Image 1 (cartoon, rainbow, N blue to C red):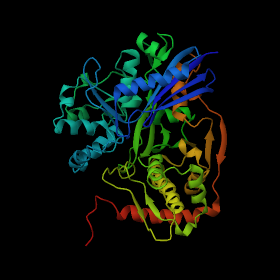
Image 2 (image 1 turned 30 degrees about the vertical axis):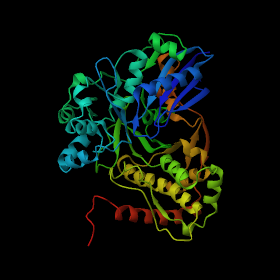
Image 3 (image 1 turned 90 degrees about the vertical axis):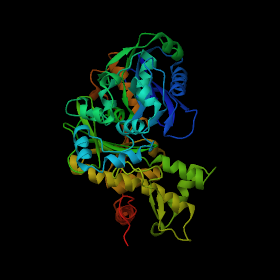
Image 4 (image 1 turned 30 degrees about the horizontal axis):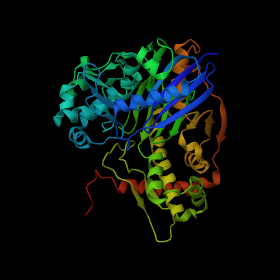
Length: 480
């Protein structure tokens, strides 16, 4: 029996999983990163933790190939020998907000970049972080000979090669969707050279594993390592949603909606994104506030309280007393792409309990995502099916809120970690067990169907959410 190793460097943890040649999950290991926060990561510690996690997962298996998954977007500046000169700036880092705001006063510039790259002007994209680092006279920017990503650095440490996939770089703000190559105008704007960037490859291309990394993982040197792709792209592959008409809906630390399309989906306003996936495109929207907001609430309002207790309290509240929650504690990605937007509870009274607030958090996250969905389907049309994955599947209440808010059936497939499934698919293709990435089809194990009676009240609260959302727009001049 052939087995492959999927390695994922996510926002919150290192993950490693062993799959057999049919794509069945045999073992899963996770290790939390040895730092706090989600906006900065230590590149060297990240790799050592990921390798330790991978070694634990691989013990006792004859691994034939490795598939890689990482976060999107991210940025790392390195010396020519690969030594990190900066932290990894993740999608959650908002330090370049003022730089973005200054440049996007020119709406024509922002529109042109969006049409070519599919990336709205926002702090999450490396393009703006690079411009910000240059304008702040950051020595790391001027000394960097290699500009890479979290995933690109992991691949370098495993193979000795700086290579990046088109799928990864399509979320950089510097990749032209039509040409499937670096965007020269974006590079000029950032004052960087092509020579500083990695050669581009497809996500399922692969290079051999080097001896040092092989020893650290406890596997055989020379086995193929896929160039890899970000977790959002691999979620689509690992959910069996490479064909048109299938939407993936993941709710983990952050939230995202994605749907495959044959051409770049960037028409209309700059409220959704479009990235490249193997020989196709992926239109979608991502939000910062999802499981991150739930974790914040539990730390702040319910330390030590069991998850099941909070769920029961939220189930028991009177719906007419649920306040409104704006899930922007960590800034806003889609749909407004406003890093300065802040989270808030609105409509609080002295009668509401912890259960009301927790229910409001779950609903606020879902309302933010439904707002994105309404805008996205204007460009792509309604999907034929929606596949739900991520930490949301641990909460029956939250899954039911998803189905009722969207008014759609939510399909559940095997395995919570769809992006790890996608990394495994890359490895399976590399060792000849999978002919095409479209052939990876996990088994559908269940469905959450909407309860029609619940939706009218939810839509009333959603309308209230939209009113508060518009009223608290930090880019609008206050009314006198």
